[in-house]
Structures are given as C-alpha cells and as structure tokens.
Length: 231
Length: 149
Image (spheres, rainbow over the protein chains, first blue to last red):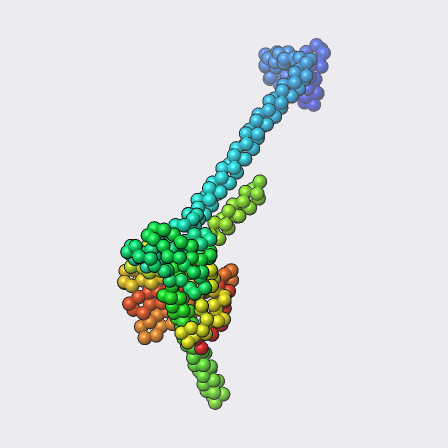
C-alpha cells in the first residue's frame, strides 16, 4: 500500500468512517511501516472518548451570554448615575465656594461703608475732633472743649448748626465714598492742587527731556549723513 | 459640562480681578509715619479747583474722579511706600511713561489709559520724603500737561 493510500485510510480512520476491513488493511500497512498497533489502538480509544455535545448546549450558552450582558449593563448604569450626582455636587460646591469668596471679598470692602452716622478718624492719624459721615449727610461733632464749633466746610455747604459734644448735626447733603476723608478743608484743597501741579511739572520736565533727546538724536543723524556724503 | 464650568470659573475670576484695583492709599490708613489723603469725585466737586494758585486746572477739574496722595517721611517708610507702590503698579497693569531725575529729585509717572477711569500715578522722591500721587479720571496726558505750560 502506498503512502497516499495510507494517508487516505488514516483520515477516514480519524473521522470514524472506516470499515473493519479498512482498519485491518491500515493496521497491516502501518505494521509494515513499523508503527506500533498499540499506538493506533490508543488513538482509536481517544476518538471514542470524545465527549458528545449536548443537544441544548448552544441554547444554554446563548442564555448564559444574555445573562452576562444584562449584568454588565446593570453594573454600568449604577456608576454613571452616581458619577453624575457627584459631578453636580462638585459643580455646586465650586459655585458655592466662588460665591463665598466673592461675598467675603466684597464684604471686606463694604464694611467701610457707613450705615448711618459713624465716627471717622482724621486722615493724618491725629486725635482731632471727630467727624462723622453718613450715606446721605455729613455729620459733625464738637471738640473736647465742649465749645460750639463750626466745621470748616466749603462755601457751597448749607448753613451749619452749632452742636454740643457727641451730638450730631446735619450740615450738608453729599454722598461720600466710604474710604474718603470727609473733612473738606482748605488744606485738602491745597494738597489736591499741589498734586496736580507736581504731576504737571514732572510731566512737562519729562516731555522736555524727551524733546531735547530727540533733537540731539536728529543732530547726530544729520552729522553722520554729512560725513557719509563727504566720504 | 466642562464648557459650563470653565465659563463659570472665568466669570468668577474676572469679577474678583476687577475688584483687585482697590484703593492704594487705603492700605496706609492709620499707619504711623504715613500721611494719606483720599478725595472722591463728590468731594472734588465741592472744591473750587478752578484757576487757583496761578495755574489753570479748568481742563482737569471736571475730569477728575478721585485723588489719592500718600507721603512717607522716613527712610524706612519711604522704602515700604516705594515697594508697595511698585507692587500695586504691577498688580494693576500700569505702564511706565516717563522717568525724571534732576538734582537729586527722582520722579516716575505710570499710566493706565485703556481702563475706565484712567489711572495716572506719580512716584516721587526728593531725598527726604517719598510721595505717591494717584489720579483717577477721564483726563488725558495733554490735559495734565496744560496745567502748567
């Protein structure tokens, strides 16, 4: 028996399609090839021990797969909801934090705004007669000597009533910013004027120096051009 | 969601930064060896700042919103005032405009003209005292120059 025939019989043998006569012929051929018949019988035994596939295996596998898919979906849904809730909580916490910071910052500014007549210190830090301010009015108190005083105000202010110590009187209707020194005096007027004059003086000096520098640069450029022309 | 949070944070930051341009002089209120003056627009209206002391401030008086002046009279306080001013200038985005140094007197002008109101700051030192003058308003540099010409 040639090799092709042996191969053909062996394939039929592995497929379980050989007849007893063909098995005998195969054993004889393999015996001629020196292959142990015992090995061949062992292969035959393995073939017989192949487990049979249950008829409902496919259905049970399909059911198992469906069950696993459902469980997976349930697991995915729960974390997403939880994550969404945590995200909204984080956003709300961020907004609350920012709002609190802003309120705290603005509160620090607004605390200086008087809600009514308050006592303001002199801007130079000296303990002079105190001057009070309000949102709508300027309030003036007297000095420690208990003498009636007339506060120094701009001529445009309304007439002032004299007052006793720690009593307030309304002298004008003006709205001041919380951080301003409410005492408008000639000294303040002079300071403002001096500030403007100083500013203008420095500005003009600086501009003057710039103009001089520009002229110098222009002269240098002209000199260089002349030299270049000559050469 | 990310876009919403980003916009929210941006708005909050902008609002906080906008409030950062606070009064410079207020920091020195009540501090020893510092004198400060802060005069608001309402107070400025009460001052007859027109053509006094031989200078013409008519073009500026109506455009001034606020004036802040801080003086330091000792070496230590002068240094503090200078450093505080430099930091305030940096925080508020002022730009250096001009520096003048004449006979031992130094003065620098910083401006911020792209804001509302405009800010003009002068930092000066005459060897003994240091002064910071900050003007807020709608005036221009030409208006300031015209005060003394």
